[in-house]
Image (cartoon, rainbow, N blue to C red; front, side, top):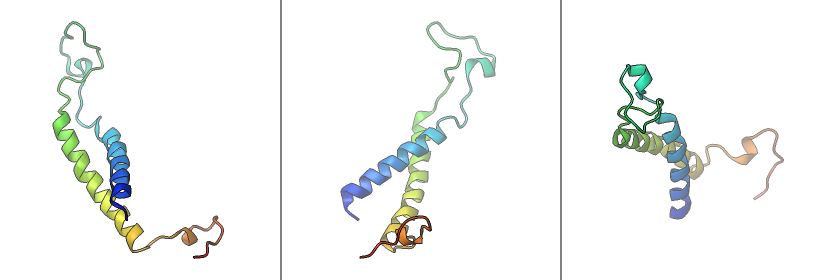
Length: 90
């Protein structure tokens, strides 16, 4: 696999995982019964802990990318394995 392709695939996986990790552990002012500071939205998280979420995202994305890399490198699943696609010749 080309390194640029690998980086692009990892970035896409990382970005998708980030959006699934963002809500983990977030509490809004309303949920915590805390007074809202001026200029903040009521739905804004109190402590977003973005560094921790980026680290968790990176670990999860690395595991998923390793699986995708193994599938692509060792051809564990090919386009011929998908039943509704036509048969491809090499």
